Image (tube, rainbow, N blue to C red; front, top):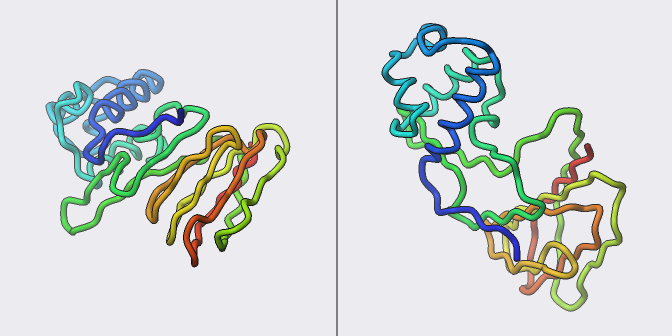
Length: 189
């Protein structure tokens, strides 16, 4: 069965592990990173212990200080198939406005992504043969309902749901409601 993510909310444990990992990788102390980011050392210590509730601005400052992509804070190693339901996933919020960002998938190093809009109607499933090795597909369903994913274990999605799966295995997209459409990203590594 496909792995499902926990409900939306601040992903403190994932952020904490990423901050510790990246600070260690850079060979920097808590004080050095806090100074570079313009935050208190105690704030960084809380974040690394998973007890802080960081704003989007604080996280960006830490990414700059650690010379890392923002997605590196929120994107733990991914399972082969990943489903994120609407309203779920790692969310961070801005401090100054009603703005929230949910990371669905980060681009791995040395990869290319193609973006497509998919429209489909009920009646015939689109079965795809495996693509070249290392390909991943990401689908964000915008409207309707669809059965999407690996041919042997497709997942029913509703509007707003996200799934990723290896595109180098047989897979399917089957619309279950009229007017179904989605965004498809094909990632080549």
